[in-house]
Image (tube, rainbow, N blue to C red; front, side, top):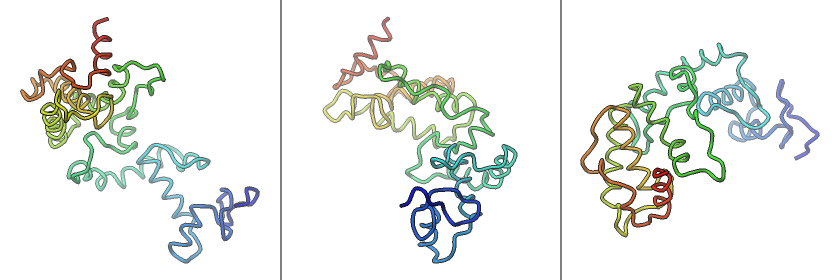
Length: 220
């Protein structure tokens, strides 16, 4: 790749990759065998902006203005909403496109900053769980999402304190976080919670180093 050369497609200023094209246009040429259409690649960047809230490095904001972005979101909204209203088995509760958070929720997905290297366990939990709490409190969680959060917590609670307990740290696969997530979502919903997990405490963890730290934080 020659960093001084630029893509030959009109209005594309990305660095040359091969056959006269930048990386995305080169891949399109290989896929179709035809000269890439710049409108097509622009639409792909727009879709990425709507889904993730950002595009590739050096691409910049792919819409003329926010009004154009809103129109693009409205064109896709009904189709994309089906992805969490009629989810696949692998769908994660709380998953929404960045455009949904921007135009429907009126807030970013994450309102808390990524914790620093010396973060507390509570800061990490807040970062991970706060969006789900907000969705629950504002009535945006679907019934299947609430059920899945609760079922995951119930399964985690059955393992908690046994040799099968998963991960002591804070993370999406950790049993401790699954339980705390369900407990906090239940509180956000104003509901008592499921008997299978609502009274589980982190002191019961078999791998309790992280949760001992968390309990110490709560005692301060």
